[in-house]
Length: 113
Length: 113
Image (cartoon, rainbow over all chains, first blue to last red; front, side, top):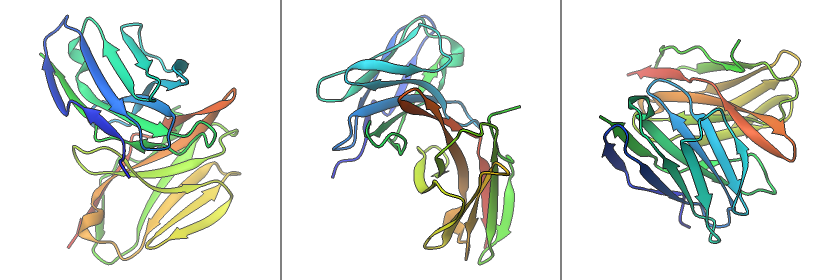
């Protein structure tokens, strides 16, 4: 049973660039949530996708956008990168009908120079 | 006041002893409570969930919930060096038809051999 997968594992970008991160949910899951985790902090909720629509959004600027595909996989896009966007980006999958139990992928470490 | 608060630690516990981790939350409407373990540089791993007042045991782990006092705790019996990690508390906040996980910043636990 495949768990949550994310790609790439690591990424280095420069300020002003754009980045796309990818996530495939756990088998049987239809909901994907994205989090940003800075060093020494808990995960901060970015947004959640279900049925290819953004269902909830945290306190992140419009530079952060996403998409969910018919196969439930998801992308996180960040435009105009800032140094402060350097973090571990986590994808978590769940079942919409169950609601709250989320399982995390390995994360993508983004470094902005 | 943060919505979910944890002592950042580090909490140092001798091997074989009981480690006690605490978490308080502010939203009285919270219904689901989770403990995740996160090793350095890795993603969070679900340890336990608890939904009702009282204790829930799973192996060496016991979660305790007291909704009246708005706290949830995690006890780790017979602590092992491999238990050394950051422990994250997450609490759901009802958002219309779905839930949003609100996270504490985590408690760093060190098990000393």
